[in-house]
Length: 204
Ligand code: 5GP
Image (tube, rainbow, N blue to C red; front, side, top):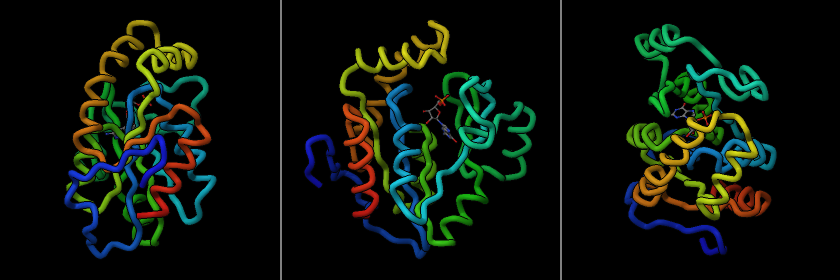
């Protein structure tokens, strides 16, 4: 893989293993505000036979977000029930809120031979990789830290304290990205980043 903004990592020895599952799992992670959701939604438009997983979360819904499309917004007790009933493929606490991937939908889609895209954090990604050893892990980078801060400001979803907390978490997330992920894509130009992710998925 050799386009300007894509780096193929070679440390992951499990990358070419298969485990008899029909579809494939693609994990997309990156720091808050890097544009993961936009990239995922665009990638889905460009591919056939793809399922974009919708997570459950205890985070309050932003007014621009749509229930069941961006997330399923649920209470802490509902979240706990789903954990207890084993309904989540993985879950993690991120910036003080719980986020989890509904297991059944993902498994169904994989069995149906679909490419399943999970937009989840690094903690969740590591858990999924244990279950699906051939999952393709893509990390989205901002062009610069300053650009990331600007994008978060423009998005205007968080108050300044939360935005700062998320920005501080970005460095840690990025370091984990280098360590665990198969591919790095820099989201400098959205169109190019989308094309690169599509290309990675088609090649795997
Ligand atoms: P946000 O609040 O900005 O939508 O998401 C915060 C972080 O939670 C992002 O890094 C996002 O990728 C991650 N996230 C979203 N859904 C899930 C999930 O189901 N599981 C995990 N582990 N992380 C998630």
